[in-house]
Length: 181
Image 1: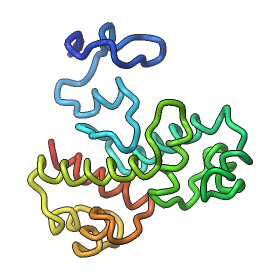
Image 2 (image 1 turned 60 degrees about the vertical axis):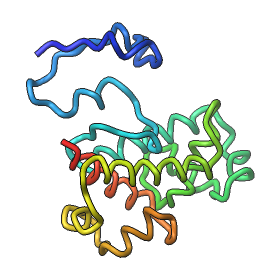
Image 3 (image 1 turned 180 degrees about the vertical axis):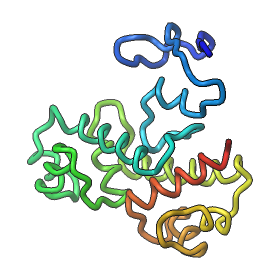
Image 4 (image 1 turned 135 degrees about the vertical axis):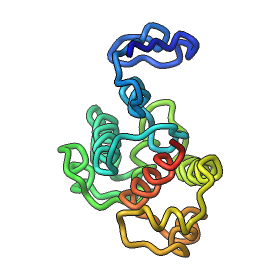
């Protein structure tokens, strides 16, 4: 199937091609077509995800590494609560244990991005919005989740009453967006 999306407007550029000119050949029932066309920041509302949480995490890790590529890691470490060794691990493509707040701090260092607190708020609000759109409650999310969290923990993390690891966020987001299909 050949799809073009001229109605999207030229708000994004992917590999030097504006969204208004972006076309792709995709399988007829592919739910991944949108993720191949645009790079999402982890705090944005997603309507499609890759097949697995690991692929989604790899996408976000690559985004965070690209943010750090042209920055002085010592300066980033001074302005965030993240040590230089962890920042180097992110830059080198490793998957260090990050909290959602730490991922937001890295994202916030990119030009034109909101502050870390706003990013965390937006990320969690989009999880709640996605649950509403997909008509999912925390029990349904728990049943599909590949990490060991119960419904109460999921609710507390989404509502920001308990700390959330970035890996947990990615798994929860994957379940929610996958449930919208």
